[in-house]
Length: 223
Image (cartoon, rainbow, N blue to C red; front, side, top):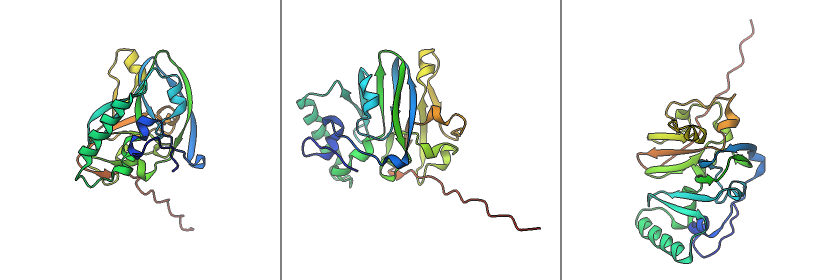
């Protein structure tokens, strides 16, 4: 996965303007309607450019630090240096490679749109490196190959304590915007509506999400 790195720390891709490039053959292009206010969206890129263009504010959640950091407007040099220092200190002795920490950050982000409208972007299939989880909250996204699955069948070896998706439309209507995902079925008929949505997942310890093996039905024996 190619990255353009400004600076020497790979993890600061997210704050220095890096970009990941996905193989388009494994991606689905979707049109997502975004609403005025906060929307939780993503596709695993460091900076989903189509989503950024119309957003006024963007924030990312960084596990292990348990903090939000601003992506747009861009941080100052001093703010970037402070984040890097905090992260290096937090990762010291954790056994997590600092140079590969960006995989835990890339997922979904909070986008604030001053007005509603449509954005077009690509959503890849589940990629192992993007669905590695750290203890506590993780910001991930709903992939194309999750559609038709139950949430409980994509959790791999994780013990999930809580999991939610955020419905920006309900938020604009004054309703509870949080959808509990435990036991939730990603309906095939509504798949295009949820694909590319962000989801927040709280796990007991470091673990790996993966799709449950689906064994095709065996052919029936002849009469």
